[in-house]
Amino acid sequence: MNEFISLILKGMKLAKDLEPTLQNLATHNYQHMLSNLDEIIRVFISARERLNAHQDLPQMLFRELQQQPQIDPRLQEYWLRTKMMELQHSQLEAERIGISSGMENKQAAGGTQMGSANLAMELGSRDVQAMASSSTQRQRRRKDDEEYRTIRAAAPRMGNTEIPPEDGYTWRKYGQKEILGSRFPRSYYRCTHLKLYQCPAKKQVQRLDDDPYTFEVTYRGDHTCHMSDTAPSVPPPVITQEVTQSMAAQPPPRLQFRLGGGGSGGSSGSGPSTVRYGKEVEYLVADMADVMFNSGSSSSNSMELIFTSMEK
DNA sequence: ACAATTTGACCGGT
DNA sequence: ACCGGTCAAATTGT
Image 1: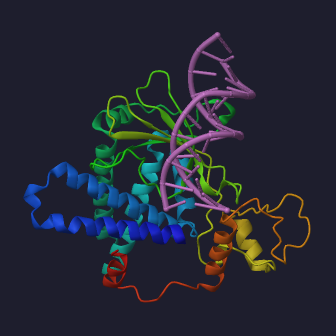
Image 2: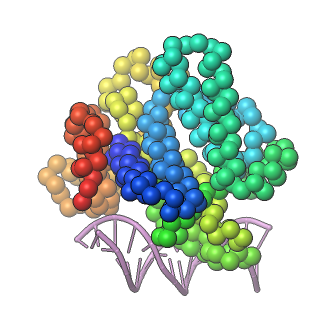
Image 3: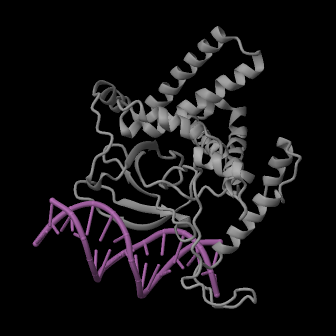
């Protein structure tokens, strides 16, 4: 949940930062504004993915994705994102208008077009053309049949950083390597929570030779660390039968704890014996408490409140 | 003090 | 022997 909130806050901060530029739009250049908007969109999309994580929407989409093998693997992530956007769009429209099917279809079609437009911008028209024409179905490559998903993302063009774009997860860099034919090194990241959960997710980030403002991000392994959610995702020790059934029907991302190798001694007395995982354990406990008792967050969420609380 | 990054060493596959 | 991925000691950041 913490990461979800920080994503939302980040998105709002970005939006807020944009506010002064609205006064004199003419003086700010088009590209700059575009990349700002892209960044904001990206952050909010990540946030919404987080929020949806405990519903079956992602799994539904994933199945749908698997039934469409003609989609280039490099496009899959964006396919998912735009698909989710469309879904929510049409959901909102349906709620607002009351379900009138014909109208809704038109809206959905519009959404699709917008989605692919965004896509084209991010990927560069060359790639889109190439991918559209080549229906090559190489879902998986590389040996051992391990899954590699590669996408491209625009780097923040603003004066600052060459840091990889935000994708909603927290990564820890563990290596960097010069790659043979490339001008820029490749960076290796793994999920920050590798220690606590057995989260095997990794990613590689590399700038393109020709377009340094574009990153190529390759994801490998799935996150097992969706610990930020409301009640149902963290089952209590005693499991009722309905829960078991629903879990069997659709297994949620599992959490695995392996604290302390041998399980030696009682940890009740705050003994220094278990040093292995430092502070992260505390965060975990805090998060679990947050989940179980839903403590902390205030119920009043007006934009003003949040915005003003963000000012430093 | 602890957490994250940097960077050369190491290692497995080809 | 080389290349790309990972480890881990040293360094830097909070």
